[in-house]
Every structure is written in C-alpha cells, then in structure tokens.
Image (cartoon, rainbow over all chains, first blue to last red; front, top):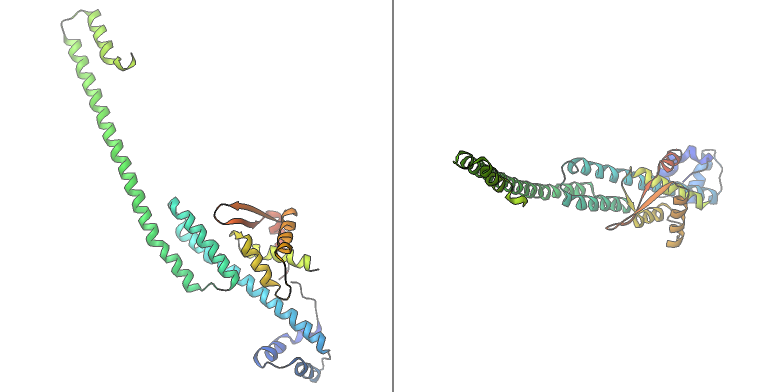
Length: 185
Length: 85
C-alpha cells in the first residue's frame, strides 16, 4: 500500500514506541506531539496510525511470503536433483503448503526444516526401488542377450555341419537356406 | 482507489513468492490479510485477480492436484518491480 507523505512520518519511531510499547491513547499522543511542536488533530493522528499499521502488516506478510519462498527453494535444491517421479507430487504439495502456511503466518521454520528432513528417507527408499528396478531390467537384458548368442552359435554350428557334409552344392544351399532363414518362411 | 491497491498487492505477493506457485485460495488469503479493515467478498477478490490476468500481469494454470495456481508473467514482474513497498 502506498502511504502518503505526512509530517507525522518524522515522528514514526516515537509514535510506534508510544502506541506499541507504552500503549498511550491517541489523545495522549496528540498532547505529546504538541509538546514537540507538532500540531495534529486526533482524527488525523488516528488515520495516520491506522495506515502505518496496515503498511506494517503488509510488510510482514510479504516478508513471510519471501521466507516461505526461500524455504521452498531450499527444498527444491535439496531434493529436485535426481528426485524420483513419485516424489515430485509430494514436493509440489509440500511447497504449496509452505507458501500457504507462510501467508497465514503459521510457518514455523523448525517445522519446515523437519518436513524437509522427513522427505529424505522417502527419497532414499524410492531411489533404492528405482535401482532395484534398473537391476531387474539389466538382468532381463543379460538373459536375453545370452539366449541370442546361444541361438547364433547353434545356427553357426549347424551351418558348419551342412558345409562339411558330402552333399552337392545345390543341396547344401537348400539346407543352409532352410537353417538360416527358416523363421522368414 | 482500493481497486488499484489490491491489484498492486497481487503483484507484490507473487513477486515475493519468487516463482513459487500460489494457489488461488492462498492468494485470496494474502489479499484479505493485507487489507484487514476491508471485508472483501470472494467475488471481489476473484474479479481483481481476473483483472490482473486480463492485463497479462499474472498467469494461472489449472493443476489437477492444487486447483488454479498463479504466477507473475514477465510483464507483471516488471510492473511489480516498479511498485514501491
């Protein structure tokens, strides 16, 4: 909120001290100001103080949002690298929750830290699962490749047998074609 | 007057969020807390937020988990940085 310039701005620290710490009334504050050479009506002083309070509230709110955003960025930095896809949703929810609590003024930095730390074992677990899955895939690939190699060896062996046989060339060609390309027929 | 102040506050809130998505409900909470002396209706708040979107200061996306979430556009970012306070 834009606050208009006022002659009372020069006394802002003093007025804050009077109203917040000493809890003086508007009337008393007006008298004290008068003693300092600043004449102002009670209603104007009241309006000025109200706008000051509103400005302060807005500043505090924006500060809370900024620190909430900072907490979110830390969590992103900590977890987003190599985060398994399952964790993405949790991270998104956590970040939005942090922003909401920050706006409402209920974000306790220690609890935010704790929430972040709670994600660590989940992340570790998901990483182990992911590695297990990758290992399973690698095993499958190894088995398949081994079988393919065996088939190739077997077909080479049969081809050699045909080539070494005493059959005529045209016979050998026919038998080789049957052996090598039987799956294409 | 309040119209301009609320729209400016929408920009300030999203600027301070530094790119973190802000759900519609949270943005409305922030506006209510920014002007505690004014009793806004939900319709008022929705309208101001929609105005900001129309001015291309903010952009909203529909998230299936979080509902509507808001962020500043490049134009809004410039506008927000030019605001005082």
